[in-house]
Amino acid sequence: MAYITTPVYYVNDDPHIGHIYTTVVADVLCRWYRLSGEPAFLLTGTDEHAAKVVEAAKNRGFLTSEWARSKSKSFKDAFHGFNILPSDFIRTSETRHVEQVAACMRLLLGSGDIYRGEYEGWYDTGQEEYVSEVKARQFGYASPINRKPLVRRKESCFFFRLSAYGGEIRELIETGQLRIYPGVRKEELLTRLEEGLRDVPCSRPRADDWGIVVPGSPDQTVYVWIDALVNYLSAINTRERRRWWPPTHQIVGKDILWFHAVIWPAMLLALRKTQPFSALELPQAVHAHSFWVRDGEKMSKSMGNFVSVDVLRGLGDAYGVDSVRFFLVAAGPHGASDADFSMRRFHEMHVSALANTVGNCCSRVTTMIERFCDNRRPEKRDGTGFPIARVTELIEETRNAVAKGDVAALVSGALAVFRVTDSYIHSAEPFRLAREPSQRGRVSGMLHDALEAIRLASLLLWPLMPERMQTLWSAIGVDYLTQTMGNGSSAPSDEHFAWGGSRFEGPVASLRTLFPKVDSADPSSAVVALETRRA
Ligand code: MSP
Figure 1 (cartoon, protein in one colour):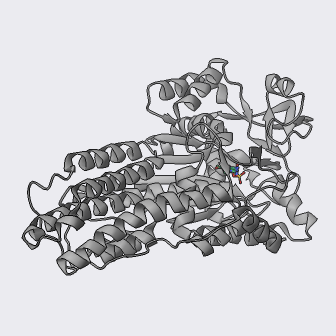
Figure 2 (cartoon, rainbow, N blue to C red):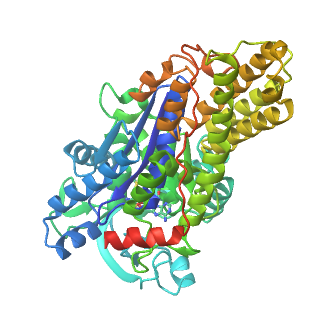
Figure 3 (cartoon, rainbow, N blue to C red):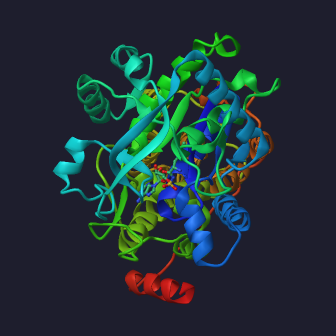
């Protein structure tokens, strides 16, 4: 059973590749759990109480609430367009969330973990966060994120007693009770934790009607980050849903790891000291991916170089949504380094990994089954020389890696199985043997094994490319999983991951083009065209 979360996204602007990426990764992980027979709950949504949302609405002449509703819908629609199936989409302006934040504030005010004080420091208005003196100096008193000047701010506000939890958080991370991926980020966190923690502001003077008022203090609104983090609790804090707690995998970008790996667990530790939450468990793992960059440059509003949802949609129209999902996971900034987006890279990956490796292998094997077995499922036979042990090992290795949240392992694992199958066919030459009528039984055995390897590889790829893999399943007569998986349920068990562990049902149809062949003479001009259309 898994509870998987993405950040809630700011609604000051339209979604872009970064938001789609994080959410696709979470969706892939969630589908993987379901395919493995484990129920999973995927939460995503929008973060609406930031000052920059108020400003964006004002600049365009909208009521903040109207603006937030319409942008939140853009996120929801964009996710839908990339075949992301969240179990819930939460908006932080919803009553269920506002009430949950107020309840948490009340409890922490009561326990003394939130107290009134005065804060003075360097404030990053773009990020809505204070920057430490050390960091401010290091970056020349400009935002480490967008380079705009930091603002000196002094204000009366409430503080969260973060300093009391540094030791516990460090221990949780060190002992692996709270797992942080990738390892370099874990080390960075531990180093920063060694410096000790200061209490952090958790409210700001109320500037408008937007935001959640601190209970009992109408002059203060809850600081947007404290507000936002609570969403993970708000969404499942009902009688039917409470069983999903705690989060199994929290997928975030590296920019917001500190909030998720330090402040959020500290808030939960503080809440645990209050009666209603005395049995509260802590999240199990935070996965911090890196950033998509464009031609080596950070994507930013001022540079105007974001890869927009429209560009990704255009790619989806030409190459298929599954190809976009595949590319995001296969080429994305899953680990510690940033990933460069380029149309050329996208096109090349579609051609080499999907059309040439996956597509060709499927086409070759099913076409041979059509020709040499009259579309009937080939018979199993011993002594085919197929490297079954290697394939089983690859499946096992991949499953272990994904259990740690490494969704990119699905790509490498599946491609390795396709390559093993291809080279088997290349050297065993069933197409040549089939010319001898006496060898047809042997050929059938070979094709049986190749087909079984393809079936197993298709399981690894289904979370990334559900539509294409369902087409494949139906062509090879194993589409009994389609219905269960298609409606968000989990498979009855994980037996289908074993060699020979499938119920083959129908005949095998030849599958000549699983992935569209797209000619892209000048992929970069296609992007320009798409972007111009948008402007
Ligand atoms: N609202 C906060 C999160 C609160 S969670 C309790 C926020 N929102 S955001 O809209 O700025 O989205 C942040 C997330 O979007 C990042 O953490 C990351 O997941 C994703 N990305 C934004 N830009 C990105 C790239 N250029 N590349 C990859 N992902 C990035 O922060």
